[in-house]
Length: 179
Image (cartoon, rainbow, N blue to C red; front, side):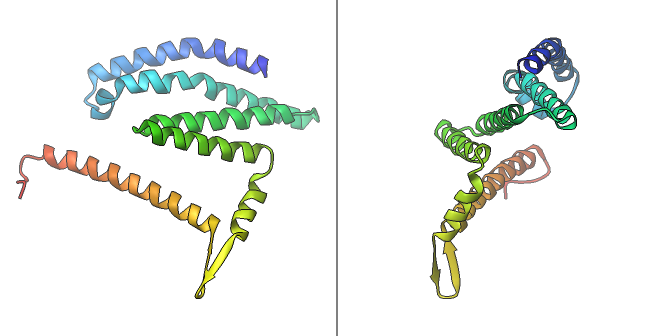
């Protein structure tokens, strides 16, 4: 674990500097609106994630080698799961503008990741599915409700983002009247 972390850190220090310089040049010479608007966010939030991504890659390689040779690799597999969970949680929390909602997403994601790592996610999902009532011919379980709420949240967020993007594009077109 320490060897792959050290190698990732040593390799990614110059890569992060190169990426920051490259993004600055692309921002100045390009007409990419998104990069111009979110340049500081990309520099501050995404470039630091290069090292953990490289670390996970190194851990995957080491786990593959350990499997081929027959060495124990359970700790490295747990580390991969933890670092991947941290990366996903960090990206999700950075994308959500509301701090309280970002905190809620982070807590829920850590709970799911912890249950998955200790192999209790399946039994927990089965327990939630067993807690059900039948209304008419419809079976409603806690798992169904959780899935529905998550699906609705994601779809509403996507619709909001899509409508804001569409509205920005529409206001830029001069031939279209507000009517």
